[in-house]
Image (tube, rainbow, N blue to C red):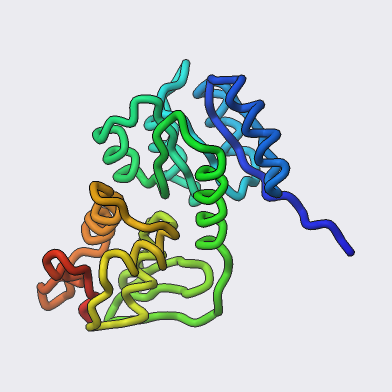
Length: 228
């Protein structure tokens, strides 16, 4: 029986002991971990390599993780999982606004990190070649590429998956927990605002319908619906 090819993952973190620990742990779980220990070399590795996912620490020498993420998102759609020893809400919110797909506070359980990585990879797997369309908005189901009229939309993977989930059920309420599980691959905690941040970014990029009403409507305390 042929062996499965490991998923290549890049970690950008100056904690070399943590990187070695995760390298051994992730190898057992089917991931091949490459490491960079400062901001500039991490950005270079991310731009030059072909990685399934990137684990990015916020506090780095030379260039912080948020600046790296800002530059990466100009041309790279690779899923990014942010790490932060501080776990400050402002870091988490800013990271999600800049295009991070998930966020973990350090120290983290390696088992949770593996679960988050697997969720990111599941969300990036090709689906079908169907195209979803509502008015002048189009989304390719497989590639997750989106267009507004003739203009391509620069959506993160998480934003595109949320949009796909909502567009599959136009005019129907999708509750917050279902949307998070389907699009982000995780349950929402009591104080987890990641879904709301992704929705906010997505709304800003989509704009309103030509008629003026919002494409994504909030149903207070319940969830969201896509207005076709």
